[in-house]
Length: 518
Image 1 (cartoon, rainbow, N blue to C red):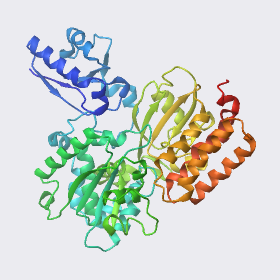
Image 2: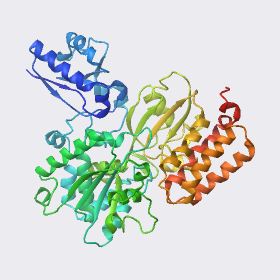
Image 3: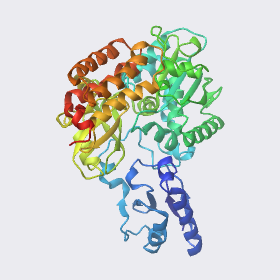
Image 4: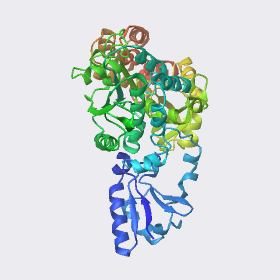
């Protein structure tokens, strides 16, 4: 009898020793004469337990973690190959783990269960069912399902995906494009990477459906250059999908075509903005374009283009498989479906949490995250990347949804949640926001290019005690100018974290704090 053992192959697990764990398990099995099949699955997103080793048993998959290479021999001696739970690292049936059991995994329903590059694994768990349904519909029918789902852009802008697709569908052109924004650059985010490394066929399927919906025959994945493993997985998955007929000139004998390529990003944060991304994809410097025209009308190479984030496109296979209403049944208000929340920073249990819109930050940080890793009290949390506001405790009980967060100046963004304990100096964080913008600005518009540099200087004067009141007023005016006058969200949102510090953590901007006094 052969025992199947799973060891994750994503970047996080590998960085924590998963390859060495897999090698030791193989050697131990050979030494003991035990027949095993070692499968490299994707991570389930429980990063504090990585490397997470799972063993297939008659009752389900039991898990052990976090497993260091030096733990393997003791685990084997305690009965790991038989799935016995007699070691301190034993976790029982992983599906019953509270971190997983309390989630609503729609987009991430397969990660951790399958070999990311196995078409057999993918199709056995409803993979390409959405594509099959899409092929049976007219393009408008596909767009209508996405509209009915209420899906909005998961990259941060939260624009209704179906409306964007409708615009491209309705714009006549000989050539149209699907562009996936995989330039995941927000601090504390990794959900896009998990999709690409752990379930790449899902992204391929979502992009293919998008192509069928709007009449596009060519797609590009604009991939963050710091994601080499994702590139390897995507390239191989695309090749396998083409060989099996899921991509190419005649998708599943339908007579319809869609081709897909991966292109590496320019290593610039601004290229996460859709028009700057398109400039870079065309081989130019990543500068923001003025709108109008919208990319949906004049996008890549001047042609109608759908530009969607990885998570937006990855949600599409579920929607076309189960129907738009099935997706819309999750969430609240105008925020429908689920959101991939990513817990990072000073957190005890960091990882991916997929939940319907409506949960609170407190529930997320305490029940899932387990509080701070340092054990000190939480002081602030930044949601939505480096341009998101720092939220104080008074805002942690607000339900997470786009409109609700916008009402108090918060940003849901890409779902990154970075936690800070009470040792953080929020004055330093305010300065960092301006400094980040000064480094990453494309330089096209004056409010962003010059404003961020002046912002750093003004904050430094405030913290040095140089006419603090006057400079605080100047900083406030500068923030207003950047919000109202910047060409894109880079300069327009940089003031959000600064303004939140001024409003909620004013003492951290005082000279006393700058000198180190507490």
